[in-house]
Amino acid sequence: MADPLPGVCFVLPGEQLPGGGAAAVGNKAWNLMLMAGIGLNVPPAFVLPTAWYARGVAPDDPALRRVLSAGISRLEASTGLDFGSSRRPLLVAVRSGAAVSMPGMLETVLNVGLTPASLDGLIRLTGNPRLAWDSYRRLVQNYGEVVAGLPIEPLPAGWPTRLLRASVSSTFARCVRSPRPCSSDMRGWPVPRFRPTR
Image (cartoon, rainbow, N blue to C red):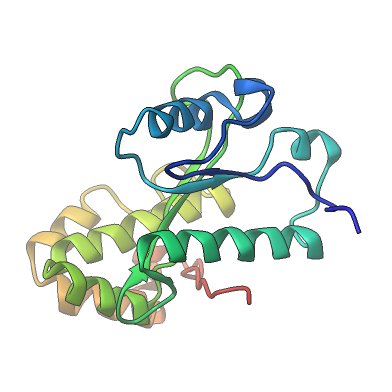
């Protein structure tokens, strides 16, 4: 049976460059592939081809879910990290792409894969609670803006800085793990929960 969603490409050492160049995978992905091809250390990635957008592949398409699961599995194998893991969490950046774009035109959601359980794993893995909590803050803010369509600054100005300077692990943990006590700061929108699709 033919692959219903052909053309997924990987940014991994030794991977062949896809035909079609930047028009097929977007300029950002194409440049990452070129850098990986000459041996530069770039983060591993997988890329959904630009043609899928033109075809109107629905987010709940079962074939797309299989492709995403297979892509995450390849990233896990290449990094030794596990998506959603409480020990060695794999975090991914979800980026849009186009053959031609201007800076700031395309959307990004950073740190997808962070959950309350994987957050603890990131703290253990890095030994840096501030990095872990700031990564979660970025996920929540990116998700709110890009996916939920909230205003660019859904959290009050200075809110993240105050939290990071004063008892990050207790205050922000309380907000993230149980958003209701902080709903006035969080504007009542739900904190995203990500889990492996397999």
